Image (cartoon, rainbow, N blue to C red; front, side):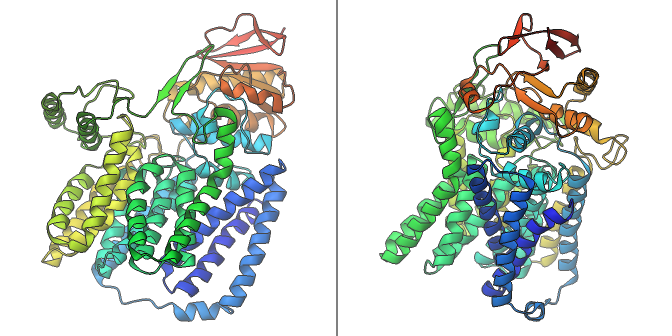
Length: 637
């Protein structure tokens, strides 16, 4: 069952890929179309099962089996024998340099895939909300909201975790959780090469573009994680591909459907998608209006309706709890802990835009040389004196004091120094020489400015900028391919490949080499790779609960505590029958308590609480059983 169940889901994608390849006669477009269909099907399946509170193994497997039967029938009708598909596929003659570059793509993707399978989820966001929300959904058999100390588990866009949930239910383990981002990494490289094709470049330029995409340092370290930036990147690339297809030809039903679904999936994955799609949507809308054809406008309206429909369940759940379909832009938790998240800028002015733009570029410029970083720091502070705003103005700064960071090897703060340099060179050359690519470049620039004008600067904004770097890859690849003298372009690609290898081998949280690499470190220890000081406290707390033989465990957390390790360790030690719930939730999500049976645990795990004396749950008193370094175990009096 462990292998059969997820295979059904994967087979649906593979059969759809074959069908779309046969229909569209382009294997890359077929890949993107199959992914969009699979992502839409997953959303529909979960939303329908959620109506019956039946997100369980057998209903989920049954739904995918039905999809598989339909895919097989479609395959038989459109393709017939597999020989017909193989017969249409022709392997082109590949030059030695192209073979090397394709091999480098496979090498990076394959290596990241190995890391993704062997290493467990272990980034900060995974521990606080990405993986924790998946565990709540599995236990509740529903994706409805629940009382949560960490509100990000509720209101943030959920599609990436939907995919993790699917594989986690079908396999009973989190070993495939990182593969959602890994698949998105591969899909993004494929989609980027297709964008390059639509921009009019040769096969050489398309391969160059894929190499640039697969070697983005932030992308490499994220490709083996459960963050969602690469997932939204992939859906945005799908959107741009179908945007181009709709832009350059008559809008047709399949292109409009794919456009709407890809936008919908991007919006369902991460909020930054709203900022990045805006200029492309405006451009397409103006182009369609210029045609003055009612059918084109009709199909774009259908695309917008599809995007809205894909997100309607998420919007409704947010509205029910937060009175806002998009969730909240300021999170305040009152009671034992107060935490404020307010990401939009407090002021909107030209100096604020210039400040954020400069800093959002600068966080990618970190080097291993302190003198260079200091020089850049001084230059940026001088720029801010000229524009008349502080680089640490709280109205435009979410957290931290700005400085050009030291070179990083984590998915939280890795910069893309070489890519920034190449983007600047390519942008200047395109704007000055390539008429047909100017509007694409201008759209990317406007997307970046939209991002900078709306969101406060954060030290980890380089992570949020991953979609932009991926969408710039075709411009870099095309520019390098058109350099006079092929050896120069080849050398640029070799430089990009070699320069990316440190992030492949030295991922700080999932290293391939070193004394504590992913091969010789226990899986339990790897969960705590980004906060190793927490491991001992968590393990002691779990052992204490084991000694109590308690199957109903309450969690009393602060708004940024690690919740997922409790789930994974308690399930490993006590089996599936253990029930875990957040207790004494005092924020707005406490209204959901009325939808769940009353839960009075026999033990409570409290992380860094400000008060545990006279602790009560549903009028039941608890006393301190044992206190570790950062965790208090409470039991009923």
